Length: 76
Image (cartoon, rainbow, N blue to C red; front, side, top):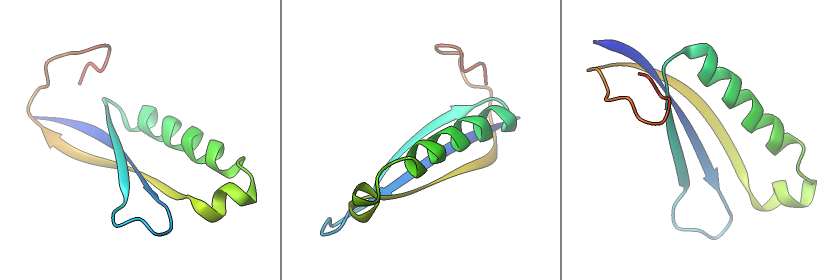
């Protein structure tokens, strides 16, 4: 088993029946946290009008996984 980190980004807009999400695997916690911080910084730099119609949060979730076949530089 190998610990990998799932960056889970969740977005919500008014009058929508569901939330939207995107997820990406990272082989290290530091790599995941770096991208999470960049994602949240980009959101914080949006206008107040944008933030009134879109809210988001991101989490780095560690979990043990069987070795994953390497694709496009993930290396997990």
